[in-house]
View 1 (cartoon, one colour):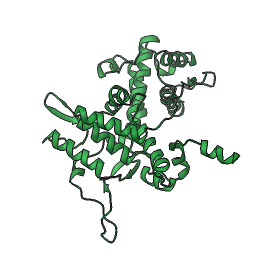
View 2 (cartoon, rainbow, N blue to C red; view 1 turned 180 degrees about the vertical axis):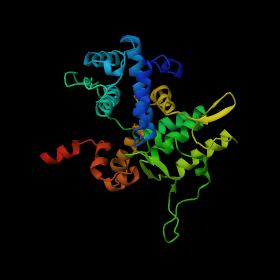
View 3 (cartoon, rainbow, N blue to C red; view 1 turned 30 degrees about the vertical axis):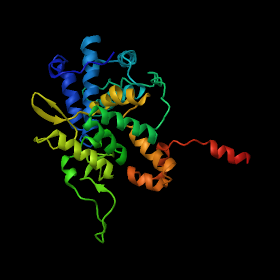
View 4 (cartoon, rainbow, N blue to C red; view 1 turned 60 degrees about the horizontal axis):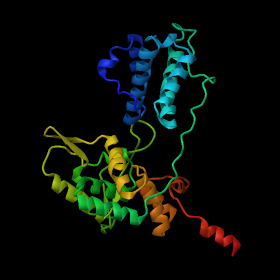
Amino acid sequence: MALAIVTDEMWKKVVKFNRDIAEEFLEQQQHLSPQTLKQYRSGLRQFFWFIKERCANRELHKLKPKDALLFQNYLINAGLSSSAIKFKRSAVSSLCGYMELYYDDEYPRFKNIYTRAIPAVPLNKIHKKEPLTPDELIKLSDELERRGEHQKLAYIWFTYMTGCRRAEAIQLRKEVVTYAKARDKKDNQKDYYVTHEIRAKGRGKEGKVRVFQFDDKAMYYLRRWIEVRGEDDCEAVFVYKRKGKVEPLSLTAFNDWCTDTFTEIVGRRVHPHLFRSSRATNLVVYEGKSLESAGALLGHNSTETTKIYVVKDDSDDIDDVFN
């Protein structure tokens, strides 16, 4: 069971106090990235819609820990992942902390409804991390080629070669297909292309702004997709067409591609972040590159982070113990 998206019309039915305190709180969270802020807004709206439907639309300062437990159990029964539930719990708890701090004079008896008495969210089954092998990537690419899925081909090769995340890929502008290969300080040509600046994952509203490197193969598929797509006014590379309009894809579209198409072709679960782990693993395991090189491509500050992404078969290391 998926949670309902709380529309503006639904939101108007939530008691005014809860709407006002949620919006006031969100206005004070401008240090968060736009994507995190969007998730906070969605989480709080879903919480207060639940309160409206199940808890008589009571105002936040009248809620108790049992209401928090009811909401958490509702999320569990809805089939949300443990990480998604923890995020929504964190959003509500942060709002409660805000109210405790700034509305103490008006509601001195109010306390955060997420107390230690609320049990921790049980962990979901964790899927085994299995990066895509070079052969699986070729299998996926060949089948998409056969189906004429040009945009999906551009996505998998750009995402794989750069090791970028969904929120980074969605920022790619089609101007990149006009770029020449990068050059060093002595004007010598490199063997790769460099994107425009993209906001990558990082703390704060601005995050970590960086460029991404990709090869001839990714550029070939990007250029072919833009050529097939034709002329339009949308600057984004990855788009959808609706009623004659071309608009940037949503992040969930990449999940849908992985679930509905890539998983079926490969024969096992594929998700957007798997391309990042696959790139790191294949660079180190199959191509013999160093952790430092893989980490530089992925934008890591430490090889300790890169190690998390690299999945190795340790059987050879064990064999060495007994040789």
